[in-house]
Length: 141
Image (tube, rainbow, N blue to C red; front, side, top):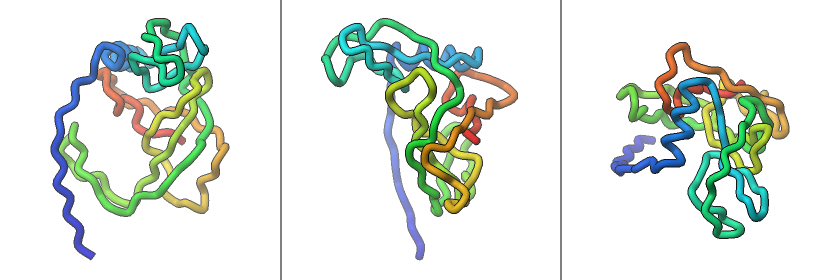
């Protein structure tokens, strides 16, 4: 089956994501914590979804955590940062890092569904040259 997707958008990262990405350059992952309900958001966002309070307290988060959901994608995608196609299949996961209450969506090292398990322990594999972007983390394994 042939499938063509035409996607175009512009995205402003905002100050929370700018600080988050700056931390990645130093292999540091931080979440924003709500002073009202203590929920720790990763990726960080400016407002608490529960309390509607502005978030300002940064807390450290581990680069290891738990795989809470996954899928194997069979359609190649164009990587907007490199301009190259990401070959399929590839694994995508929702990962709850230690110290966070929400999940981070990222690539997985494995693309074989039979080998992936919910509640598996996973860790970030960092790239050799860090630039302050989500793809500083190559994938989780």
